[in-house]
Amino acid sequence: MHNKTIINDALDYTRLAVGKKIAELIEQKKNVEGAYEPLYTMLSDYPFRKGKGLRPTLCISVARGVHGMGHAALVSSTALELYHNAFLIHDDVEDGSENRRGKETLHQLVGIPRAVNIGDATNVLAVSLLLENLNEIGVAKALHIIHEIEQMARQSVEGQSMELDWVANHQFDLNDEDYFVMCTKKTCWYTFISPCRIGYIVGAEFWKDMNMPQHLEQLTRFGMYLGIAFQIQDDLLNLIGSEQKYGKEIAGDIYEGKRTIMLNHLIRNAGKNEAKIKNIIKLARTDKKQEDVDFVLSEMHRCGSIVYGQELALKMAKKASKLLEEMSFFMKKSPVQIDENWESDVVDYRFIREIVNYVIERDL
Image (tube, rainbow, N blue to C red):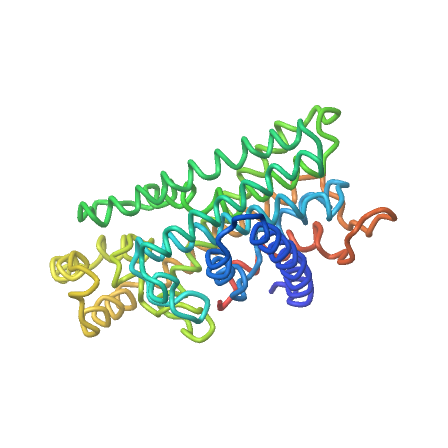
């Protein structure tokens, strides 16, 4: 079981710090001469709906875990959070989602054209923070992080494209490895791999660290296994979680026809009901009835697809845990340094260690 105190304290502290940074940035851009203020009012919606704050907390934890300063990683971490919110806005439009973080999705509130534009504007804000890094951590590290962000964004849109194509092309001949490739691109890079790598770049001695390529590779593999476990758990929560806690409609993935591990497993094991399940999944979201979705979900339980997903998520989390134990470059504890503008000392290796269990035990 994960230590809830460490997880909650680290997430709460970082979320407040990142929220303050975002609020300051929005206020600054809104007050630029000639700025169109209503855009920044609408832009303030998603970032201040209470999300987990997982990405920035992980980034700063890695930075502090390798002798870095928490405040030095705050700019990059806030940029990651803004990219995350931009992805969410666009993702909700693409999926036709109805709820996000317990409220109506942005495109439901303001319409698709304005929501897409707000997502674009959120990306622009993130870029402005990356430029701020030039003063915060120096040119060399700032350019390295821009390269990491480019790779993160490219991997993410490739993964999203794969998933959208599977749905559009009614593709069902998918195995676990297909899912792992898509999930690594779509989820792992921007949720775990890039926050870890960017945190390491900010916190490490950098040019003096001859083991940097090896350490970044270890963090990449760690983030991949952890990200796959996280996404499978997210897909499970979409099927069997509490809508009040989860913040999105339950079984939305079935309505959208997403090729989750559980659906792919069901297709392979459905037997005589395979054709019926495929025909339901092929239907457009608006054409699916509640009884159709309930049937697919009941078949997932009958065929052991839910249990299969739970066991696979646990397996991936165990692999991530083993990799973390091998990363000897982390300090086990990172006390707040004298000149560090940061107060929460548990935003360090201890949070990273606890997050491994958290991703498969969480209920939201």
